[in-house]
Image (cartoon, rainbow over all chains, first blue to last red; front, side, top):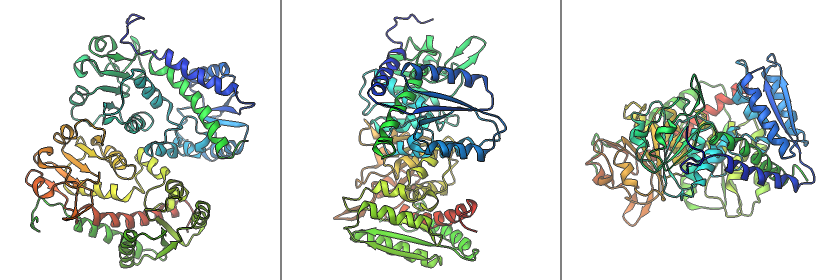
Length: 288
Length: 288
């Protein structure tokens, strides 16, 4: 295992704490603040872990947090109707729709039903479209966490050569758009890319989110590069990232560990999104 | 000038005609179809040319086309209210908001006010967000025209190395997203990119939309590559593209001329978007 004090390890803990401190300060400065509502549809064990974690962090920030559990027999129309009520309810600050959802539920349609001003996860296509317009107010949390960790290196984003490996809607593409907005030159690689190594070898920053344990080895990284590992892979050897951390650490200038890198920052971004949603709701006249 | 029969020239005329024929066929098959409404705010000479062109093409397709001219003293709120009326008016198939608009008008806010189902220009952030989700139903017209011309080469998009030069919201970023959706590996370069040539030299396809006459010369193109030129630059030497067409033609495998390349396809895409909007409005129960 990497030593705790290895300066090449780009840990999430300090970044997380800084973002949470800012959020706590904002929340403490408000006379009142609405609640976050987490919605789980059906029963999924791994979701429960996420929700408990979010609830605990919200509690630390004195941000009200409600957990709703909807039965797996709920219909799409019922879900939509309930979300629309939540959009209209001024006591609700933001809505978190936990994933996965049962097969008969159209996830994206529900995400679109959450009003962009209450979309603290940044999952509504309108929220994601706003990223293209360089308006990254409510960005998808994991993507924003990755960007935050790159920023933590102190490197100037302008002109930085970034290679994003993975082109998912909720991580790869938003990361690419957000980094372009900061002035980086971004290449997005994916399973159809002829040679990922050709791209990753020339990159100042490599961000990986594909869900394949140890996909990236040291031969694929330029010496001194920043490596941001978003992968979380359950394996017989424990939780592994998409990067062979121990080996790549000998080449990279900075590398995020898994666990302990991007993950801890993600929930902090969710809370920051909640404070931004509050400000936007005030600015839009929804709250007084 | 390039000879008319040069096989390397990727002309827009045939692609345009094919798309328009399909649209005309669709429109003829409908018992009735709503109208497109073009809105020009204030007086801008170049806008008038665009609108006349759109009106003429719509007329050929037997698609009703109304031109509205709003005074330059119209307020943002008045504009929004009028657009909302249009959203609710079943006789209106789609709305085209001509650009530029006067300085006191917030263009993006108005674009957001056009319902995504009537957004035939594909300019609403929600429409653009849907591109990230690989739903390219109503794509920005110029971006979709560029993609259509790449498709015309017959090259397999999967694994194709594409370099997009220019990262505007309405062209560069949507082109990048649309090509990713087709399986291409895309790099987006812009004014902060350290070396555009380093990227463009290795690309199978180069798409340029920066608005600088003859920015790309033959030393920046890989032999045999596809070059899609979206630039339209008024110069003392006439209208020039962002590519030095005559010189690059000696290197490229395919190259779009300016004028006569992407431009003619763009208005055809607008008409195709109108037919798609019609189908979507029916599917959503807006029309019967």
